[in-house]
Length: 168
View 1 (cartoon, rainbow, N blue to C red):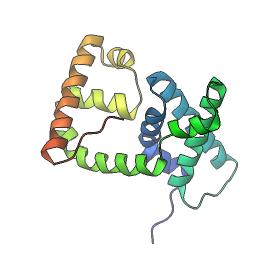
View 2: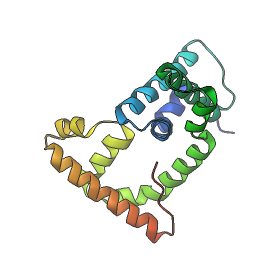
View 3: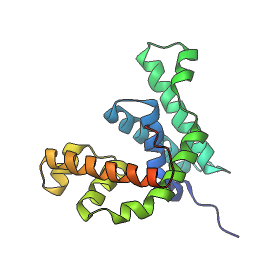
View 4: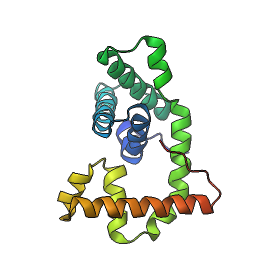
C-alpha cells in the first residue's frame, strides 16, 4: 500500500495546480502569483503545526479558496454572493489541470529547449516574462515571441488530439 504523501511532498508535485487555480480566480498575474504563495504558505504552516490532513488535494483547494475569499473581501467591493460567483470550482480546476498536464507532457518534451525552459519558468515556477528574460539572459521580446510560439504549438497539439482549448 502506498504511503500518504506529506503536505510538503504534495505541494512539490502539485504547486502549479494551486497557481493555475488562482489564475482562474484573479486576472492579474502578479496578484494571482502572490495569492498562490499565500495559500501555499498557509498550507505549509498547517503542516508545521502538525495538522493531519486525510485527503490533501481537496484540503489544499479549500485553503486556496479561503485565500481568494479573503482577497475579494479585502478589496471591499463585493458582497459574499458576488465573491462566490468569481471563485472557480476547485474540483473542476484540478481535474482540468491534471488532464491537460498528462496530455501536454509529451508535447512539451517535443518543444525546442528554450521554449521548454520558458514554459517551465512561466507556468511551473510562476515567473514573469521580465524575470524569465533576466534568468535566461535574453530579451523580454524574445521571451514573448518564444512563449507565444510554444503556446501555439501546444494548442495545436490539443486540437489534434480532439481537445477543445479553454482559456483560464
